[in-house]
Image 1 (cartoon, protein in one colour):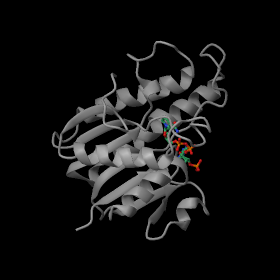
Image 2 (cartoon, rainbow, N blue to C red):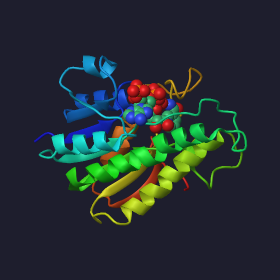
Image 3 (tube, rainbow, N blue to C red):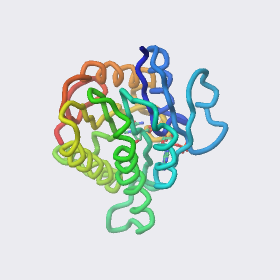
Length: 223
Ligand SMILES: NC(=O)c1ccc[n+]([C@@H]2O[C@H](COP(=O)([O-])OP(=O)(O)OC[C@H]3O[C@@H](n4cnc5c(N)ncnc54)[C@H](OP(=O)(O)O)[C@@H]3O)[C@@H](O)[C@H]2O)c1
C-alpha cells in the first residue's frame, strides 16, 4: 500500500518541491496552502487542504477532516523570514518579533502536536528549521530574530519528542541554502536537489527512533 505524507505549507518553494518529490516516489500526498489558485493546485493527484498554521481553529478543522487518515510522514515546512534581515533584537518592533516567532515556532509546533495522533507508530514527524537555528553553530550572529525563532522551534521539537511514542522519528531538518523566496537567487542549491536529499535522508532515518537535527544531505548539525 502507498505511504501517505502530509506537507504543511506547500503553495510554493520547498514545500511544493517536497509534494512533487513524494508524489514522484509513489506516495499519496496531502499538501496545505493558505490561498486558492497556488502552484500546488496545478499538481495532479494531490489532496489540497487549506491551513494557516497561525490559526488554531483551522488546525482543529484540518485534524477533523483528516481523522480517518494515517500518516507515514508529517512534515511542517511553513515558515517566514524577517521583513528586514539586518534588524537587531534591540531595533525590532514587537509586532515583527511576534510575527516571526509565531510563524516559525508556535504555529509549526501547534500544528505538529495537533496532527501527531494521525502519525503511524513507526512514522516520521519533521519540521523545517534552519542551520541558523543552531545555538552551538552561532559564531557570526546576523538575522537575529529568524535564528531565535528556529532555535525555539528546535527546542520545542525536542520537548515534544520527549513525550511521544518512543518508536517514532522526530527531525529538525535544514534544507540547505536553496533558491526560493526565503533563500534568494544567490543560493547554491536548487529546490530539486534539496528535496531529493531530504526525502532520501528521511527514508534512511525511518524506523530509527529519536530526535535529530539534520542537514538535507544527512549530516547531523549541532543543536
Ligand atoms: N530557502 C532556504 O535557503 C531555507 C534555508 C533554511 C530554512 N528554510 C526554511 O524552509 C521553509 C520553506 O521556505 P522556502 O525557502 O520554501 O520559502 P518560501 O518560498 O517563502 O515558502 C514559504 C512557505 O511557507 C508558507 N507559509 C508561511 N507562513 C505560513 C502560515 N502562517 N501558514 C501556512 N503556511 C505558511 C508559505 O505559504 P504562502 O504562499 O501562503 O505565503 C509558503 O508555502 C521555511 O520554514 C524556511 O524557514 C529555507
